[in-house]
Length: 532
Image (tube, rainbow, N blue to C red; front, side, top):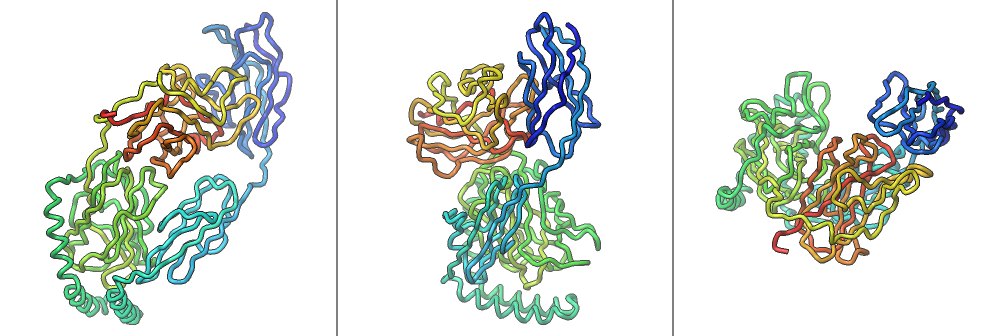
């Protein structure tokens, strides 16, 4: 096969290019286009385009980048040498931005407040904090209620948004609220001087006050904890990873957040205090290393005899993807001593946990923690079975490529790994999210799904962020039963969630591993309760 001669320089617009070349004679089976960014080598195992035409669109080119292109003809396993190389520089375009307006009524705050400008495709997180004696009543996003959340993230912003927070008084905690306000005032005034000189008196007062008010509560919670201990197990800290922390002191000493999962009681995490002293709330996010039925946690304060940073009020969250955080699964206020505290709650499936320290026992700005352990059981699919794909039907799909090749959505449930669904790329490249809706052929107790990326050696379209929904009628879709972000490899992914009754499922691909617009899927399998 002769080397192909490129005839035209790519013509780009909106991150796209059109490439054309002379046809080979005799005609080959097809052509493959390879592209590389300046400074990189061609990846001949991953063509940017394959087809029989002598021109092709090249999409999702990055502004401000120089690309090079070559074409090869192929027949069977034979492939020609490279054509002559053509390069093209994509001129930078002005970034699109959107505005998010955030406000909170009295008795609480939202951070950041006011109007925030966000670049298209970026995310923006908001923290909602009620005042002492109040709790979040509701949060409206674009005028619609999303519940009484304390954290909300706008993912992949593509339009203007608004978020409003509302608060309500917590009547049952009026006494403790008043007591806290009285102590906060004294401590703040005293701490204007040197903190170490005032710590002793503040700690003594706070200790007496805490003991008087918390005796009954401590006895009750201790009994309850002992009854449940037998059934609980600790997730090994060795498989955990600290994903993020808002503050850690690394200048005056080594008080890294990693110490909370090192298994040693004499090391501890401490927020900054040497050059700056950020105010609470303070947050630490931990990856548990897998999905678990999370049932509780244990907090061990620092054990060096100093109480600075010991947590008083707290909130605890569980998430499947480490980005979407619903209402806290546990909130409360610890006793002001240095013993290990255990908190139990309704089991919640997730891989990530967030501990939020809302206040310190003496009203100081710090947070410290010696050890953090999570109670739970690994989520297993051993009690689940796969629905036969032969009884499933693709009801709808937002996009499928049928012009540049046969990449029908039906291939997602054909049982064959070497076929796959792919969204459009030949004549147009619609942006995500991309959705596929499947009729399971009957009503089931749905417990999870398995996603197999394309298996042809090309990663284009491999899903990163996703959401999964279950419906009884295929029209009414409630909150997603599972959200998350897949690892960027080609292995099969399994996601389990709380059992949900339904006949229809919707898989939504929110993003692609390399930020491209496509979605691809070799197989989608659904896990249901064995008893069905």
